[in-house]
Image (tube, one colour):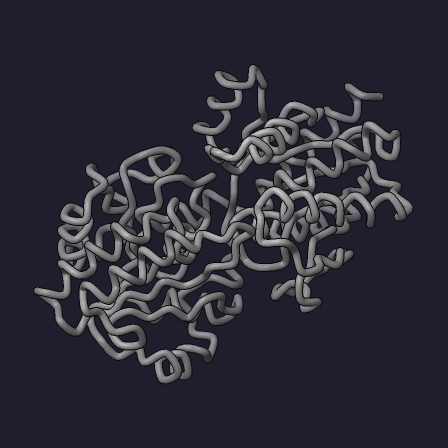
Length: 385
């Protein structure tokens, strides 16, 4: 078994660049490099597919306009997976879901005898107040035949709260895409987005509660008192859930703080992969005070592009970052984050963080992650033979 190549189906809920989606794409590419046959199944809302060059097969699943109510939205997305896959000829050794939606669909297909088993990667676990979402998340975890976790933190949560012995896998960084070498987008990005201040801070992930966007905005407003030409770029924003109330609160605060969008605050939304790496290189500092992450893939991308990083001193960041590799903030407050945003501008501190964090780029690779996945796939198939 360990000498044979596998047919692997990977499932993800979107074609837009979120952490678990990027994990799916990079894992697929690395598995192909190891000789396996891989197909990615993904919900596609606009028919544009992935903004990533793929060497594996890709099967888009049409995601139609959905109701605003979250229960009906999630139900429709799961059913779109189910309906498409029920009509497909599925012949894979491994069925591997990277999210709650596709895992629910695979759980249904397994109950109908359409597939023999499935694997689920848990990137992080949400604390939903909505009962329907709670049930969907619980089903996606408990009905999986094997769970992977991308950090020790979530591996421990699965053990303590669900009595599941998950296998830890990790993320990597693609240095062909994320490096300090300019790709030609930098100058045009500066002009188009009006990036001409100093210092320029970048965060990735959009405006939402777990990204701690409001606290970051408050910290930035404090920093502007000392650096009036500073700019904050908040890139990204493609998510399944509509955090409109939080976003409304964010923009009310923007007005109260008298910040100008397009001048001090830059909101490019979802950017292409090529432009994202350009933004990393344009910025002076990467600031990422996220409250909950599976692992923090964007931190590694920023480091690979030559950026010093500010983040919170908490798991999962402390699993792979030390004080010598990033400026870790002890208290989640606007004041302490603002202090860190000022402190990291010190040239000696900045230089030391960059130098000490370089080793992470070589330690975490998608090839190494794919090898761990492959070995676990083989063991799983032997156990279920």
